[in-house]
Length: 112
Length: 116
Image (tube, rainbow over all chains, first blue to last red; front, side, top):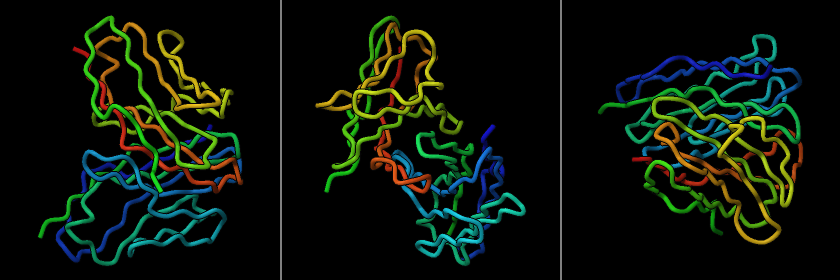
């Protein structure tokens, strides 16, 4: 079946540190891949996406590259800020008419 | 340009009562998804609807839960005879008529249901 596996949290980093959150997937077809972010008490917001192999999604300093050979879509940011503290969800969607499959989320706390 | 609107934001129900959660999708969106988020857990898919049509309800519990998305008005997630285990955050998301697998979903702020 289709599924997403994210690295376990919580993750605590100092401001300006480098961030990597690992995400790997299993898909029955050719998926599109997404990263969503959830701030406390809020819904999920789309952070970035990639729809085909080797595509790089980027937004607000975050990047993720669609790696078909390793079935991965790791999220990275070169220098995190306190305002990046949130829960990050990796997700995939295989076909039109299908649901989005989400990982369990990775909680990030950035300390000054 | 309003986003996905869910109401109420917080809902308290006693065991055995009914809970009705509403979701108004973004303007122009014809597809709605409902997800449930339990404390310390990820998002669990419940149901995927198009106007007047259920596309995928594979995540819906077989009893007490139902969803609709009428031609006019918001999508409704209805939980009958609520139990404590129904306490969770329920998120609605909407998307355009499918433009392919890259079509993203936009989420509302959720309804936090507490059953006492």
